[in-house]
Length: 387
Image (cartoon, rainbow, N blue to C red; front, top):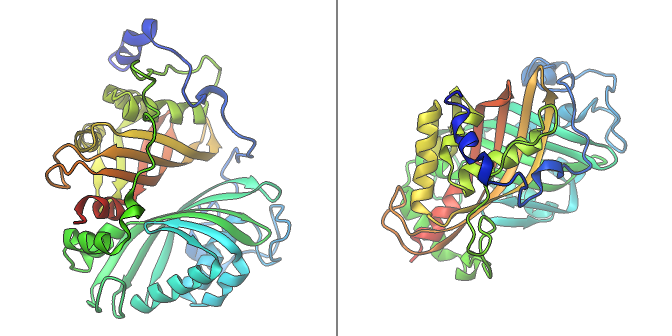
C-alpha cells in the first residue's frame, strides 16, 4: 500500500460511494470538446488571433456574425473591441437586452447597466488592457456556448473610480468571466474580478474600504438565506466520504465533485495528496500565489479555521480535453459559513457570510497540476467589517 492510497483505503469499508449531489452520473446534456483543436493555444495566443483571425468558419455558429470563425474567436475579439478599442456600444450587439451579470456587487440586470459599468471602468483606467490567458469552452449553437475566460487586466488609474480620486498607480490583476451565449448574444455571465487586490494596488486601506462599502449597502443585502442545515451535513450523521467511481476511464465531473466534497465539506485534507500534483501551481484572490500541496493545504485550513461551519456547493462544471492530453476544467461554486474563528479577517464577528467563486483546473495524469481560484473576497470583507 502506497502513501498516496492510504487515506481512501482506510475509509473504504465504512463510507459510501454515493454523492449527495449524485456525482457519479450527474453530467448534464452539454457537449464537451474532446480535444484542443478549437482553443487559444491552437490559435497561437491572443495577439496572433487578433492579427490573423481567419476567414473560414471552423465551427457551427448559428446566428453569430459571419466574421467569427469559432467561439474562441468570438470571445477574444468582442472583448478586445469593447475594452481596448473602446467600442462600448458594441455591448448592445453582443449582450442580450435583459442579460444577467453576477459580480462582486450582486446581479447587474440588462445591457444598459453593463454599458454604464464599462464606461465607468474605462474612464478610471483609460489605457486598460485585457490579456486572455485561457478560455475553456463547452456546448454548441443549439444549447448555448459556455465559456470560462481567464484574463490578466492592466492599466493606470488616471480617472475617477468608485473607490475615489485618481491615484496614477498601475494595477495588474486576474479576472475570470463565465458566459453563456447564443446567436451572437451573451445572456448569462458570472464574472469575478480580483477586486480586493485592485483596491490594495491603488493604495487604499482595504479594510476601511470594505467597511465603507458595507455600511453603504442595505443591511438586508448581507442576510444569508439559511433556513436549514448546510448541505454538507445530513441531520446528526457525519458528512459522507466519497470514493472514486467504479466506472472505467477518467470521469471529470465525478472527480471534481468528489474532491471538492471530500476536502472542503468532509475536511479530509489528506485527499489533497490524492488529487493534486506535488508541484501544484496555484493562483488565488488578492494576489495569493502557492506552490506545492503543503501550502495549498494550509490555505484551505485557514479558511476552515475562520468559518468552522463552512459548506461548499458546486454549481456548474464544464471542461475540454481527453485522458492523453489532459483536461481544462471550469468550476463555479459557492460557500456559506459563519465567521467564528480567527484569521486574516481579524477576531471572530459571528457574522454569516456568502462567498462564491470560479476555479479553473489543469488536470494531467488524473491529478490537478495547476489551479486558478478567484472569489468575491472584497464582498466577504464587506459582510464582516461593516458596522
